[in-house]
Image 1 (cartoon, rainbow over the protein chains, first blue to last red):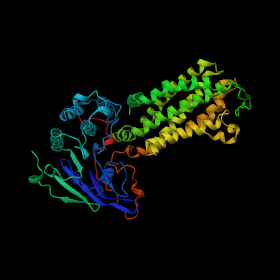
Image 2 (cartoon, chains in turn brown, blue):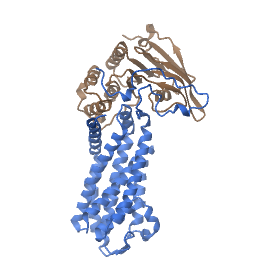
Image 3 (tube, rainbow over the protein chains, first blue to last red):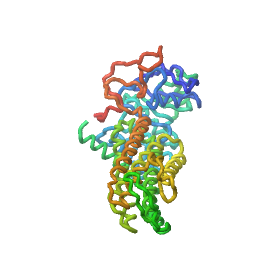
Image 4 (cartoon, one colour):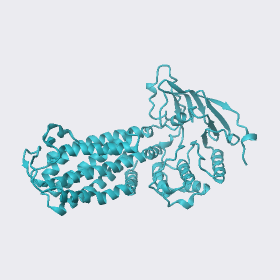
Length: 206
Length: 297
């Protein structure tokens, strides 16, 4: 993913003032920022929901996006969600989706409707839909909300594995909580990204 | 894209659109209960003395029994409200999901056509049901035309429901919008409740064509084609508006057929302000995500 000089304003209020970012293959990166720093706006632009006023964003290869708010249809079961998105992605099978569900320990809910799932399980499905086509570039917005500790650790295992197999993973969060797990860390401040040191000794959780 | 893939995309989206409607329990309850109850109550409670009115379409003066006339406007009222409500609910709650599907590569024409197909099936079923309920008490002269008029009116309101579901921010707003429009629309045209039903203004109401056609169908053997045509115009207009707002909501997912890297969809680099950085287009082999349909080998 290449982001070049992205600017965005809401009326006269400039939120992003020249964001540059290169996300190379095989990198697990994080963006943190305080509330109101412009993370949501940046995410909307990175995911293609809105266009920037200036600048450009390029993704190469398959792109996966896990939105912060869970986007599901409550009337469909987990299996129906997978089937619908299998069709959208043009996949021939659900092997990858099943692997992710297995990793997140979610296979017991395949035939349950999304509206009846717990918050954490809904988030697991939300994440699975972003991962099931094995994207090359993955944008995750607060992806572990509602996860229990066990699932949280599994999530990081999954993200690390994706990185190790050459995918680019970008995790956006309002907390600089797991910086030790990241290869690169950026702070969004004053409408720009500032490179921070990813410090394994402080952030790592084992 | 092969024909088979087109069909598979359309069939899958249609199936899920129908599942979504079927799981809307409240709408199902309205169909099953509200339609016959409304129609039966209109028949029983409204006096059956003749209510003469002039059918604009043909210039004929008809004198149907007041209760039969109210049944027809009641049936129109019921089917339009239900279709409008169903589509509003589906669009309002499904907006973000549709966008996600489109971004994942689901072609928007297939999604829109599938929604239209599901709406068509639902409206056909509701219109047939309402016609059957009407036929229990008396025999409309042209029951098939009556069903067609109800169907077109329901489809029109279904499309309006899509528009409201896309542009209004709160659920209650959409419900009120549909309810208010339906009340204004049908009350102004009902000869029993309004002497204005002969006014020129009513011609521009959203169900004018359906009211004219269904009145012809109920009480005369005159052709209802003019009414149906007017209603079809409303239907096309409302559907087009619905398609436009759907496109706008999911616009970023339009996969341009190019095998270069993509600028953020919805951004026109040419429209950037003077002095803007030129779009940075690195040489790349891969097609961007939404356009790649084959799984990783």
